[in-house]
Amino acid sequence: MYYDQKIWVGTDSDGNPVNLLPHMANRHGLIAGATGTGKTVSLKVIAEGFSDMGVPVFLSDIKGDLSGMVCPGVVNENIEKRVKMTGMPEFTPQVYPACFWDVYGEQGIPVRTTVAEMGPMLLSRMLGLNETQSGVLNIVFRVANDGKLPQKLDAYGQIVSGHPLQNIMDLKLAIAYVGEHADEYTVQYGNVSRASIGAIQRAVALLEDQGGDKFFGTPALNISDWIKTDENGRGLISILACDKLFLNPLMYSTFLLWLLTELYELLPERGDCDKPVMVFFFDEAHLLFNDCPKQLMDKIEQVVRLIRSKGVGVYFITQNPTDVPMTVLGQLGNRVQHALRAFTPLDQKAVKVAAQTFRTNPKFDTEEAITLLKTGEALVSFLDENGAPGIVQRTTILPPQSYMGAITPEVRNQVINQSEFKGVYQPMTEQNNFENAPMTEQQVQQPVYQQPMMQPQQGFMVLDPTTGQYVQQAPVYQQPMMQQPQQVVYPNVPTLQGTPVQPMATTATAQPAVQTMLVMDPTTGQYVQRQMQFNPATGQYMPVMTEAEKKAAAQAAKEAEKAAKEAAKAEKEALAEARRQRADELREERAERARANDSVLGRIKNTAISSATRTATNKLVNGLINSIVGKGSKKR
Image 1 (cartoon, rainbow, N blue to C red):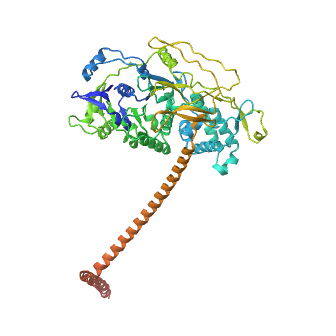
Image 2: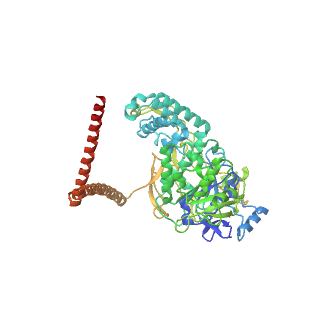
Image 3: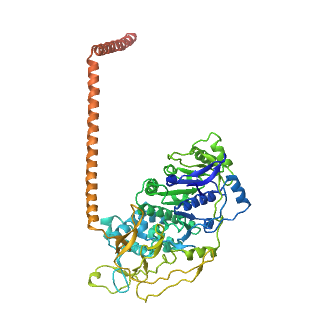
C-alpha cells in the first residue's frame, strides 16, 4: 500500500507502520518463508505499492494466484480482521494495470527472443550442456557471427538480411553445417567433435519438444514495452504465466536470467534516484542458482551488483534464505522473512543462519521468533534513510487491495484482448531449408537456404505517460508482401467495466528507411523528435548521428583512449615507486643491523657469544675424547 510517499508493508508489535522507502527500493530484496506462510501476500502488497508509486513491475506467476491483480479485492471477515490489526485507515479494493505474458502464447501475449540474443552461455545452460559441448556451441555462434554460415534466401532468391541465428530451425541447420564442415573450422576455431555435435543436436531436439520452438523466433520481445505507466500514472504490472514454463526448471531460470541481462544492457546509468525505474520479482529463486556454472554465476553476481545503479530493483522469493548464494544474498538489503519450520538438524541450521542476517531487536529472540511466526506475520528489516539495515521488527503484513486468488480464463482473455500489445508479438511462420532457389552469380559460390522474406512494417502506437499522447514505437516484422494488404479489425472486446473497446485496425505498409520518430532521450528520460534510420541487419531503428555528434563521439573516444593510457602510465609509475620504497626499506634494515653489530654493545655481545661458543665447543670435544680414551683403557 502506497501511503505517505512510502510503501506501507505492515505494522509492528507496537502499532508502528513498517515502510519500504522508495529511494532504497532498488537495493534489492528477499522474501523467504516456508510454504503457506504468506509469501504471496507480502509480494502482492509490495508490488501494489510499487505500481501506485508509478514504478513498473514484473512478476513471475507460477501458481496463477498473482493474476488477481486485474480484479478488485473482496472485503470479507478475514480482511476486516487484518485491517483492524494493522491499523489501516480504510480498505479500498483496487484494480491494477496489468498485462499477461506467456512464453507459449497460451495464457498471455507471446514472449520470444532470437537465438542470437540469448547467446551461447545462457543457451548452453538451457540445453544442459557440459563444458566441452558448450565450447562447441560457442564455435557455432562464432562461425555465424563471422558470416560463414549458409546465406538465407527468400522465394525469389534474394538474400535475407539479419543475424543467421534467429529460431530453432536456424540453430539446428547451423549445428549440422558446422558438424559437416568440422575439418574446415578446426584450425581456426578449435576442435569440433562429432560426439559433441550429436549431444548438442539431441539437447536442441528436446528443447524443441518442450516448447523452445515457440520461445525462439521473431518478433523478439522489446523489454522497454514493460517500462510503462497507465493514464493515471500507475506502473504497468507485467505478469508472466509460468505454470507450464516452471515444469522445465532450466528453461524457466535461464529465461529469467536473460530478462535481467537484457534489462541491464538496455537501460542507461542513473546512479541514485528517487524511486526505481522497474522492479523484478523472481519466484522460486533457488532455480536460478541450482547447478549454475561458475562463469554464469559470476555473470549473475555482476548483474545483481551493477543493475542497482540503473534504477532496477530485484526481489528474490524462495523458501529458505540459504537457497541464495552468499555473494548474492549480501546484496539484498530489504528482507521479509516468514516462518521457517525446524524439523530436522539441517532446518535448524537454516533458521540460525536466517536469524544471523538480521540486525538484532532486544525485544525478542530472532531465532526463536522465526519458528513461531503465524501466517501473515513476518520478520521485516528494510534499509533506513542512510542505507543502513533497520532493526528487525515482528510485523503483521497488510492485506492486498486486489483480488486474492486466480482469475477465470474469461477474465484473462478480456485483459489480453484489451492489451495494447495484442497482435504486436504474433509469431511468424518461417521456412528454412536447403532447397535450390534462383541465385545470382555472386550467390553461386555461397551455400544458401530459403525462407519467406520478412518486411518491416510501420511501428505500433503506444501511450506516452509524459504527454498523454500515443507515439510510435519500434517496428515489427510482418509476412512478405506477396499478398495484397488486408485490413484486419478485431471484434468488440468488453472490458471488465462493461465498456466496449474498438481496437485500431492495422494495415501492412512498407516502412521508410529514414523517418522522424519520437524516441526517449536516455539522459533526460523524455521523448524527443529524432531522425531514425532502419537497420535491416537488426530489424531496429537507430538514431541518425549529426556531424556534431560524430565529432563529439570521436573526441570522446580519443579522450577515453588518452585517459586509459594515462591511467596505465600512472599505475606503472605507482608500481615502480612501490618497488623503490621497498628496496629503500630493505637497505635501511641491513644498515641498521650493521650499525648495531658495529657498536660497542654489539661487539661485546658478539664477543660474549663467540667466547661462550668456544667454551661449549671445547667442553663437548674434551668430553668426547675422554669418553673414547676411557673406553679404550677399560678394554686393555
